[in-house]
Image (tube, rainbow, N blue to C red; front, side, top):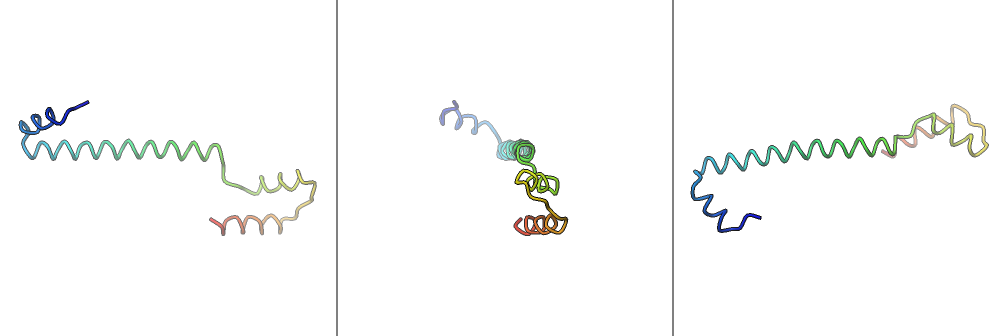
Length: 84
């Protein structure tokens, strides 16, 4: 852990431009790391919970023992897409 005294002595030796450059570099690296981490989490969630599609609706109707028509499937897909 960096103590405030060591940090203050280090800042005395740096010029203002170098200090600002380091801060900007840290912000850029953090932004890039955050982007890739968020992308990884998003892909993982999509793999666990894929978006609903017509095939899933047909399977749901089959599991309930009900026959379904194309009109019903289109209506359900329209309702699902309008909720997004």
